[in-house]
Length: 215
Image 1 (cartoon, helix red, strand yellow):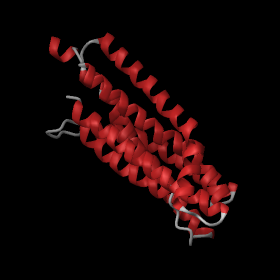
Image 2 (image 1 turned 90 degrees about the horizontal axis):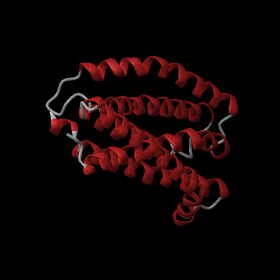
Image 3 (image 1 turned 180 degrees about the vertical axis):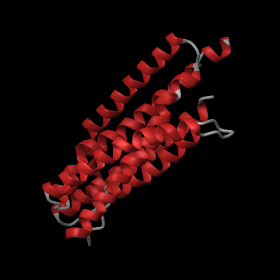
């Protein structure tokens, strides 16, 4: 039992870095998806409000269903790791697609694209988020260590959010110049597209490290 209770520093780091990646993608979506679709792509505020409202309703059903699915999962990799990995991979892809709307789209086609990618992003985020937090009781039977690990993960999540808050505008500006857009809207559109790609790749690397490092 002593072995089960004691988490190594490497495992704690791996769990914490997963929280950094997880909240980087969460903050990017929460803080910038409205700006991207309304200000850059030209979707109306009303349409985006409806999309966000539908996504919230969907989440209310999605979260408990995902919790039940995870609890009933039995594989040789455990019940959490497969969903954590699948959820992260699909969420990273959808995050990129969400900020890579085809410039040829407009009107109802663009609204449909925004709706599908945003709702899918929420579904795949839940697919990864629920097993991530549910893993804690499985790591150790020590209540104190569970509390410490939970506190570490929440602190690391705060770091992930702060990174996005601090670097997004500067990074988008730098990447858009490298991408060589012509008009002001195209420059910003390309900046967000490549920034989302960078964050998606980092997220996948960080969570893959969590999956591989924690027993």
